Length: 324
Image (cartoon, rainbow, N blue to C red; front, side, top):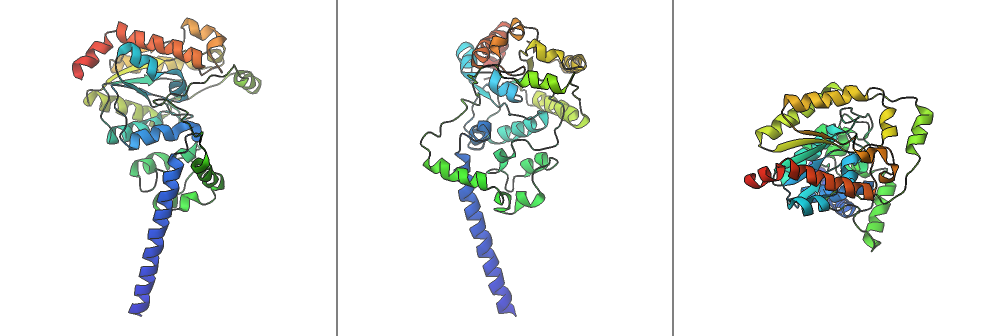
């Protein structure tokens, strides 16, 4: 009986080891697929390989990712900059990225928090869930911050290969990644420039909704305050920025003033500068946008000049240099 148990133990050990090695191989190839999941692998890879060394970090949703060009900000301020904007997600998962960033990299001196009207909501489904596949095995933080979403089950986080079952498209992309010579990165220092014309998103939204209402939910609100306190404790300077937003898009949000007033309240409570560009002249010119919420490439370049000018004008660069 002991001999049988020993054989079973050896068999299971070999099976687990083999599963882990195959999992490791798939994850390694998938991480190098620069075209999938809105280029999020580009950012996660830089984080987990400790390649981010920036004085200025930009946080936020896709509005951060697409609206802030680090290259322009770097050139004008002479300070290194990286964009951590996260496509399709709100502050709940932006905070996860913040934690992972600080865990594996040197802390920044300044964090620009890109605000948006839906930032303090928490969506139900785990949008763009595939971006977590290569990194989530035995990762406690990813587990804690994604488990409440509709997407993965508990076994996916702890048993090798389980999360890849049923992911035929993802596994097929691994083959393409190996063979594709044009597998270029979508993002430069986290920024994805959108050189595309105006689309019909706003018109579609108007047909479905007369107006939109966004919430300030309790858990994201508490997490947002926790983040602010943690940064202040670590002597990381914070500034809030609300990027340009096409005026017609602003008008269909029924409770926009309530949310903007909340951001103003938080900025005063914690003594954080807030720069609201939603009334900037750019917000009244469709030519700078590809939809109501996102700037196109030209718009992002112009806005990034304004961001750099703001940093210089309010003497934020000097305070950065003193800390470095």
